[in-house]
Image (cartoon, rainbow, N blue to C red; front, side, top):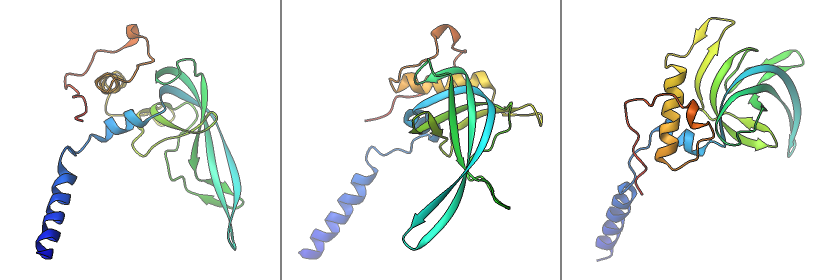
Length: 183
């Protein structure tokens, strides 16, 4: 009898884990969780080295802070004009710690989701750069800027998230619809 009870408990826990848990689109998750979604231009960068003490161990970490000047705010405070994007990595003494997140050059234009870390300092989630144009090396994202913005707006409206970009500036919406999340 006890074994039957354990088998039933296992069965119902497995079934309940799958009910209503359809895999979500990573883009949808990134858009929904972002504090800010912006189109802007990288205007500056600086490196900061911090010393971290943990127990008996002391270590140094480098961070690159990119200054992002806003062209358009799609999600978040529409009055935001400039933010700092923090990425791990950069030069430390005579060693270079490679960036663990996105790296930008001055004049790069990006469409990105940002997570607020502290006052006016943001980080970019792993799938948070939606579009990039790098004039210095002639690179541009495969998916066009207007299509990327349209897809983001579709996701926001399907999830009842306010769009900061004035409606008159919305691009045509992509043809593939976005379904609202299943509760």
